[in-house]
Length: 334
Image (cartoon, rainbow, N blue to C red):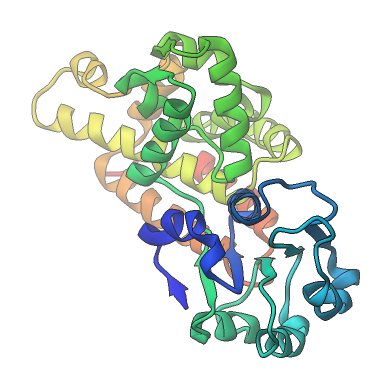
């Protein structure tokens, strides 16, 4: 049964109601996090050898055997498949026809929409089929706030806006950043913009910002160097596209304010979150370089670049390098 995004958390809290849960999508970190949540609900642990068995791709043939095994100490068991694919469909169908209370949790990152496993999961009433895709905008802000609230940490609005504009789209990396912030703030603490910019300015994020603002301000060589550092640090091309879209959107807001009669300084000061002081010079150079019409064209090209990166078999690294080069080489136009 296909589960919509709003019902995913509640479904995982009630994981025991299902015979199987299939987790698929582009966010590998979120897939793993949700799989762990489902396993904990049923087996009360991730590493109980009597109640939890994890099967890697080469071990999938053991699915039926492990599903029928009994826990030696009582309690419901979980079979946790990693890297699920269409090859497990025949076995999964046979298992679902058998009498067993073992929960099967399947991680299937990158599963295509037409895949047989996806079709089975969407249609079977005993399977929860949950898509796991990178969060953005309000959804990402809500998730970050919830993660911090779990540790009784508050975050200022400006700090939250700045943070969500720079986080990786992968849930595992989001969690890692949240852990750093919680460690800094302490349980019951509060995070402001200064604290967040200081803690989150790691190598990958800093290199990505250097690449984006280098390209927008016309520094082709600097942008290329920073992009290579960011990619080496694990930043993916989709994250580059989203960072570029965010930067272009901020330039658009300032440009619109100036076109309506605001001074450049006032229009920049009105931005929320405010421009990080270390990026102010690059922001102003980019603002001089891009007209409203040119910014709109760049936004559309960047959206097309992100979509191209998500196509099967796309040479996303090459697309990423080319897009940064094109932005850096673009000329101001009316």
